[in-house]
Amino acid sequence: MTTRKIELEKIALRTLKAERIAVFPHTGADGDCLGAGSALREALTSVGVYATVVVDAPVVSRYKFLPFSDEAVVYNEDDPQGFMRSVVGSDTADLAILVDCSIPERIGNCSVLLDVCDERAVIDHHFSETCSVKFCCIDDQASSTGELIFDFIESLEVLTGKKIFSRSIAVNILAAIYFDTGGLRYSNTTSKAFDICGRLFREFSPDLREIVYNIFEKTSKSKICIQSKAFSLIEYYENSRIAVCKLTGPMISECGADDDDMDGICTSIKNVEGVEVAFVLRERNENEVRGNIRSSELFDASKLASSFGGGGHRRAAGFTVTNMSIEEIGRIIVTMSIEKIRSGQDGSK
Image 1: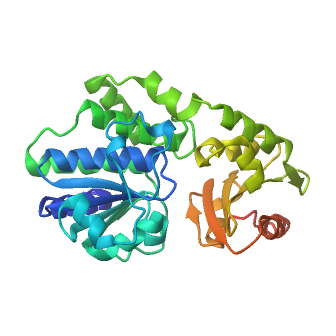
Image 2: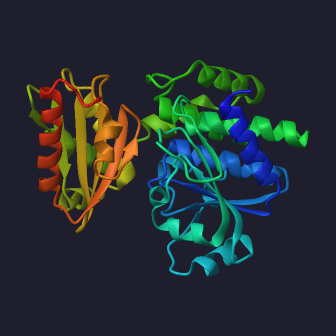
């Protein structure tokens, strides 16, 4: 039995002993953590465990097509126990499950809710040096957390003897896998991901066109506006091996853009011929700047992001910095990137 299967089975056994479970996707919830979290919630509910998905901000329009995404509860209060009481009917939950992340800071302001949960579990596919919780499955060889949730549900079916997979679970898992693999195109795509997609298509015939349209193609006027500004503001360094785009608060406000509208900009900049690492920096408020990184095979994006307390994958990562200007952060990341490239490390060592 593989380590992944053993750890997921331990988590599954723990969930079956729980009455109330809170599922926490990471802040800025995307297609993988929302799809995986919603699939997990439905699976637990189907075996008689009360589970709810808790997020730190409303689900953006792009992901509202996901089954049960409208049932995710937003935490924006200052009373953790009162909130938990209103959501799960008790001042505490038996178990908190972090999905697509492994550290409390990654679930944003929801992190205070972990103090009113008896135990924690982690299901994630991002590399982590350590996992400090008892119930932990981190497999950075998995294509997505959706892939891990598929295996989790398989374990749950074996343990309970019940048929759990459904068409709505299939849509959520497919959305999770498609999002994080770029439609089965990125280097993190695994043979397991293909196998899962094949099985879910055979058994449930989900509408792939709807999934692809909503995740990759659906566009708003505000998105077109902020993209046009972004592409006109790209700064190139080191013979165009480094590309940086800085989006200020006034630019974002002028377009009426939100975080979802800016998703994909960094990938498009990275796809410019010759660019090895691309950065998009955007002001979220007066004291906070969000950074996204996309890189080539030669540059480890997650290591650079970790310098700012962030993380992610080798090719795609992010970070959030407070009390620093967007110009200052821009200078720092350019200096760091140039040093790594000129030293011959290319950011990967």
